[in-house]
Length: 333
Image 1 (cartoon, rainbow, N blue to C red):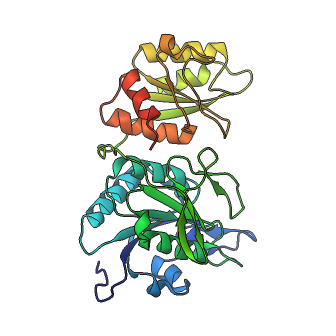
Image 2: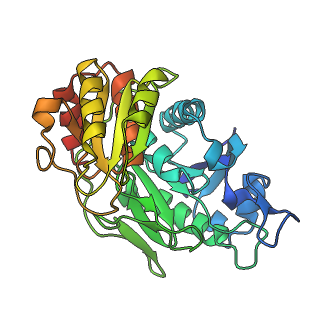
Image 3: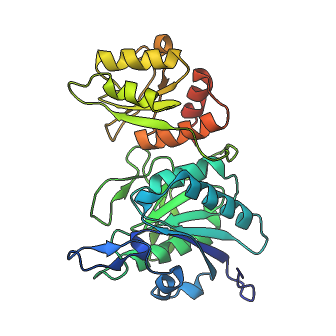
C-alpha cells in the first residue's frame, strides 16, 4: 500500500469492509443487491473532487454485509488501523462499512484505539448501482471530516447524510431512510455543510482500553417483553455466556422471574448489565431494581448493542468485578 506523498493534501487510507455502500444490484427483487461487490477504488471514482480533498490509498479488510461482521473482523480492522495510524505518511483513516452493525464496530474501535488521528466510518443506505445512491455523497463528506484538523482526538466518528456522530451514542433508527443515523441522547457532534466541516463542541478526554485478545467472550442480549419468563436467561447461561445484557422495559426492568434468574447468574460470576429497549434516556442504578443487592450494572446511556460491546471488551480485558464494570459504564467519553 502506497500513500500518495507528492501532494500537500492530507494523506488518507480507505479501508473497505463491504456493506451496502459497495453493493451491486441483484435481479432477485427491485431493491435487491449484493453487499460488498464493488471495490473501494470504483466507489471513489464516483466522488466529485475527491483528489482535491486528500491523497488517497485503498485497502480491503473484508467484503461482506455488516450483518456478517464478527469480532475476528473487528480485531483485524483495529490492528490495521493501529498500524496505519502509527505511520508518519498517514494522516487519517476512512472505513467503509455496512450500516446494520456500523454502530457496534464504531464503538469497539472507539474503545480499543487510542490514536489521535481521525478515524471516520461511512456507509450508505442505497447500493452503488441504485438511482440516487447516497454512497458518493457520504464518501465525500467522510473524506472532508477525515481531512479536517478539528477531527483529531475525537475517537471514532460516523458520518452519513452530512452529519457527524460520536461512536457511543449513534444508532441506526430507520430500515430505509438515508437519515437513519441519529444520536438520540447526546445529539450529533457536527455537520458537513457547503462551507465545510462544522463541529458543535470540543473533543472530550478519552481513555481507551487495550485491544483485548480474540475471541471476545460470549455476551448475550435478552429482549424483555410482557409475559417473559426465565427461559432465555437459563439458555444464555447454559450456552456459556460470561455476560448478559438485559434490553429491559422502561428503566431496564423485567418480570420478577427474569430478575431473579439474572441475580442468581450474577452470584455465580456472570456479569449482568441492565439496559433498556427504549431509544431515549439513561438506565440509572437502583431506581426500580436494586442493583446493589443483585450485583447488577446499570448501562447509563449505552444501548443494549453498545452495552454488549463494552461488556465484551471489559471481560476480555480481565475487568469482571461489578463495581469496576459500573465505573467503565459511567465514563462519559
